[in-house]
Length: 87
Image (cartoon, rainbow, N blue to C red; front, side, top):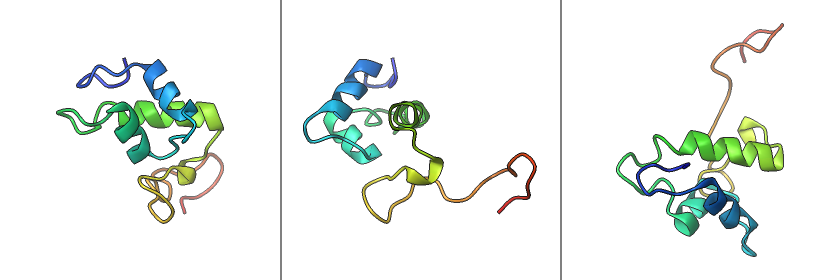
C-alpha cells in the first residue's frame, strides 16, 4: 500500500505512470490514481511516490515536478553532499 488513506497500491501508481497519457508529475498521479487525496493530503504517500518515480526513471531530486514546468518539488540540498559543502 502506497497511500493508506485511499488504499492505493504500488501497482495502481505504476499503472498511472504506464498509462498512454503517462503521468509524470505528482498532480497527474494524484488525479489518475487518487493517491494523496486522502486525509493526510500526501503526507504519507508523496515520499513513496517520489521513490517509485526515482526508481522507474532514475530522476534526481530537482527533476520532480508538482504540476508541470516551473513547479519543482525539491530545490537545493538540506545537508552537504559527501566530500563537499552545502549549496
